[in-house]
Image 1 (cartoon, rainbow over the protein chains, first blue to last red):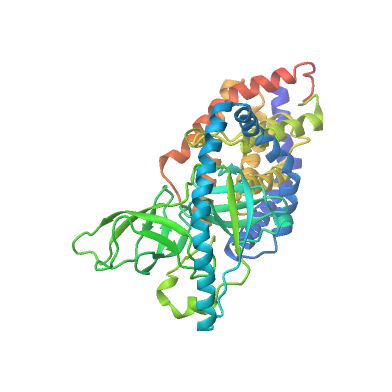
Image 2: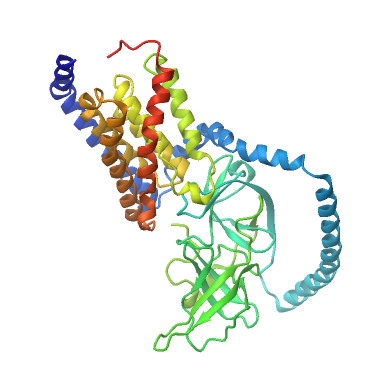
Length: 304
Length: 160
């Protein structure tokens, strides 16, 4: 056995050793170059490679999603009473929403007339697509979702993701049959928002927790606990007017210039399986972004 | 796997990938063992003729896609891990599984540390202590994994 060991130890030194180090160096260089192109230089050239691997991995994702599918199946076969009561609730909700919708339609028509009178070029045409969440992030430190819609369905990078209650996040990576979205609560994210009550503009930053921060409001800003924050559309990523968060806590430390504001996302982030992918068919006016200097401090609504 | 050859290695790696992509509740996900590196290290030790550093690199790219990290991040970590293991293979191969588990603890820690460092390097945040939990879970998984592979591999043991 020991003779074997010497033999085995000797082999790498004389025959495989230098080759192995060479291979290592080449592979590390390749990896470095890949990382540089993929992230630092922000190039799209690697998309085909990523797409190919992702397509090859489709069965893996499909199988790893099976436990959840089985869970759903069990739920499908679950209590009839619950379904009936849920159906009742939904019917009531539908009725209520329909009533509100009628009012909304007249308001929308009025809005269009007024916009036409003002000769405003901005039209609100948003294409909506329903997607299903395949899995939430594998890395617990990154707030991401995988959605079962991809390039084939017309998903594009940067598309906004909403649920029934508000903005969830945006698509950061699209493969042919699936896409990855980052939530607004991720540390890399900032959503341009305005206070619904008075139009005060600011940016809501994610911090990795389930809450959002509003770091740049001066101490004398007109903002209150309970204020609804809606997307302002500045930055051109998120469509205008969707609920983003509700102000939960406002603190002012004496001597600090800015308020410390915490807001709770309006979207019900951990719940639900369906999401809506929204796209402004008419691109948001990019001039708005340039006119307003406070709209984009640093890293607004970009995934990188 | 020594006996089952390519097919066995491929099946083991696919299973490892599925386990990696399996959604877990947040509390458990923090401690998810690095299954793919585990299987890869086992293959590096037991089937070095078929499984080398280039394969480790390709596997790293696949992991990068699974984790949506920037391409190359896991590739670097897996390549270095496989290099170290191949270098130590001569001694590792002769140790019983529990001693291998002990010897490999620094390897997992190095792997995790490298990933953390690269995370910080490409702009993700670095979180404290909790991110080292996978080192513990991965180390604990080495023994059961070796036992399972030994069982699957039992019928023929005369290969080098």
